[in-house]
Length: 296
Image (cartoon, rainbow, N blue to C red; front, side, top):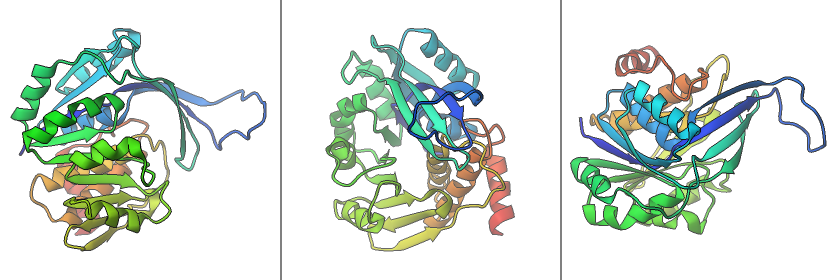
């Protein structure tokens, strides 16, 4: 299978789960489920792809601090091929408020530096040694766009909860061949997808949470895939990254785009059925077995 290089995205997350979001009034909440873990979009993708036995390497920045060490230990324990640079601003941290519907409010307590000293030679070596690049929309990743443009490798970008014409995303859109995004903040997601295709993309995938996903190819073909129904949402953190990883797992094996969407749906469902960023039970074998269960 082709080797994947994932660029950017580690945080240390403090996750608070409540039955419903607090009303905007002063109050005291006396009890809430709470846990801490490594998070962010690069961590989710690298961990899921590693569990799916997709060869990959992962680069990010973090602080030379307690939170950074916890992330390093977490990824090492899970056998992720991870290398990094230290950020003088420290490890990026988020507080995620979750409700029982799987909705999230993210509060960025600290953020990574946009410009810092990078291990440029090692990054370039990983670009050259990989057949597929996953570029995450972290601010410092903009620094790698010129390198990626010259590398002539297929590039996947996940725009997450993109809003139309947001200038922040332009460097990532411009350099990418394949785009994933969520419909959460879009007025007309199909029009947004068409606009991205008109900019020369191979395909665009838009996820809709419990309403499944939609794909548009450069040839104008629309594909729809319903979400897999589950009994209970345990934690929706990482669902989009798991969908992306399941899709890419199928894509790298030459599966049809419809089957890739099915693999993505299974991985997303496994994620939200688990407290973990990536389900402990995720593996290539289990994914294929679940595909047979749901679709054969």
